[in-house]
Every structure is written in structure tokens, then in C-alpha cells.
Image (cartoon, rainbow over all chains, first blue to last red; front, side, top):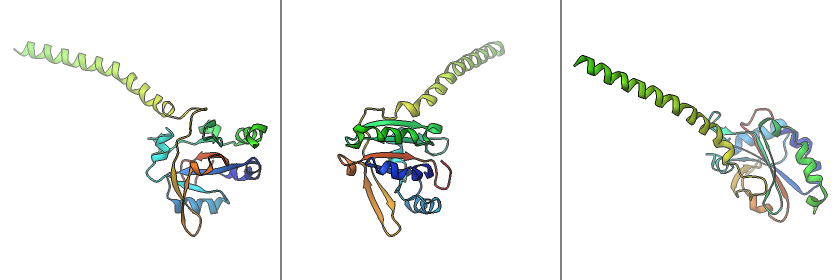
Length: 103
Length: 85
């Protein structure tokens, strides 16, 4: 989440909203956000309904996998990054900076 | 009588072992394949959701559809609060 915070200005400049999601409570996520200096919302998927809808619930952790989805203004998925690849947001920032997404 | 019993037992054990040998890799494969097979793919519509977050004062609702036609959205799933990444 810190990595997205560091790139937040670049992402916001391309009309992109960053949202974190986990299965923790909303209050735990707020405390976590404050601790690491994250200013975008960290959503609470308590019970894991959304995590399951996105097909990334992992029995082993009883939690989501580390996955980023970049979703366009039309609601379609533009990019996915899974597990280790999901830690570096550079690819998402690059995609957002492509001219067609700025409109 | 004892012999017949032994034969039946032996056949049962053999069948059980064989069934186990066949079923184990099948089950393992199925388990491994499941997380990716249900992930929505690039180009598909992202499933809508309505989730809460705490802004410091209130619990707020937020839906993916709030951003339709307005903003791109990065949805970053993380495993647990207070962990890295």
C-alpha cells in the first residue's frame, strides 16, 4: 500500500482513484493506513464476498491474495497483477499515463 | 472361510489404493487451478461491490459504480492490515 501512496500524485493526475481492499475491519484498516501514511481509502471486505467475486480468496491465508486490478472508466478491467508482481505499481502508473486513459 | 475373507480384504485394499492413486492428483490439480479460473479477465467488466471504510469519524459506503464514467480505479487487494506490500 505504501508503494501506491508514493505514486498517488502521478495516479491522481491521470484521473485514477486508488482503493485498497482487505478482509480486515474498517477500523483496523484505518489504523493501518494511519500507521503507514496511506491517505486513500482502505476498504473492509468483512466476510470476503468481494474477494470471492474477484476469485482471489486464498484458503491457506483465509484472506485475499495480493492482486491489483486496474479498472477503466467504463468499468472494464484493463490490467491485472498477481502476487509478487502486484507489489510494484510502476506498470499500472505507466498504463494510466498512456494518453487514451487521460480522457 | 478365512481364505475367502482374506481374498476379499486384499481385493478391497487394492481397489482402495488404486482409487486413491488416481484421485489424489486429480484433486490436487483441481485445487491448484481454482483461484485463477474464477478471476475476471482483462477486458471483462469488473464485478461491482459496495464496501465500507472508516474515514476517522464515520463509516462510509463506497461502490465501484460511483466512479463509472468519472475515474479509473486501482483496486489493490492486500492480505492483512499491518503487513508489508
